[in-house]
Length: 267
Image (cartoon, rainbow, N blue to C red; front, side):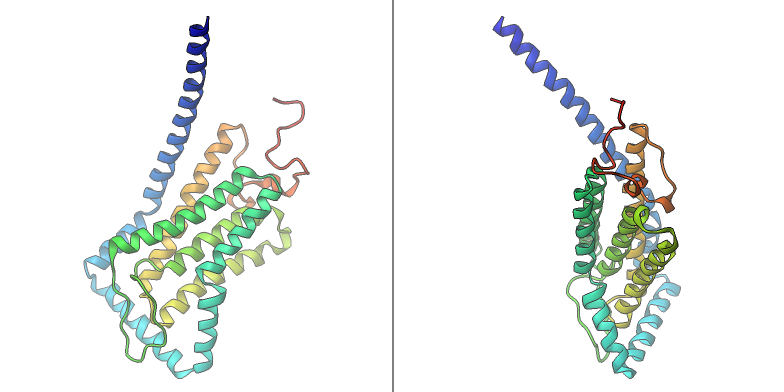
């Protein structure tokens, strides 16, 4: 009798855990595959950089020299750029904004969306660091530098974090932003992402192609994880909303039970 019970207990967990492991592993493969496809533009850009493609090299040099010369001639502009780059649009501020959004999602009991936002933000930081180490591109060296930054140059961590963070915040908060103000939220996100790129090149700590690479990788990562989140919605029988409606439109009407609570009368 005891032997039969032990055999039964051994079989049940193994089956359920095996199915869960397969689903989790499948989703990881989906994320990896989607990110690989979304990163193709960034990969092509890196190939051009490594090959020393003349038009891109000239663009990098011209942008760095002209913007750097402009800030040297306008000290007030330089002060504003430093504040924006080091305090407003820096990676720490961006990640704290996403962390605040994750805390709000947990309060609203949007567990899966909170996990998606946190995982995407963490993955963006780790991916940027890993690519920097693998590529090992040297930062610009300009006369009379106005700023210095440690580490390698490609991709721009500021640009990648801004692209990923702003996209995450839009996809999370879009359902609860009044329709009349959504254009303002999108405009603010666009200004932040573009502004980060401008400040990093103007300060002489990144090439323009570093910024572009950061944008592409950040957007590609969010696109890959968001697509995986949509796949989960399909598996649970939920509709996949348009991008302009956010990832979880139920947040706009969710009550105290949270957006992921089962519909009454259904199992």
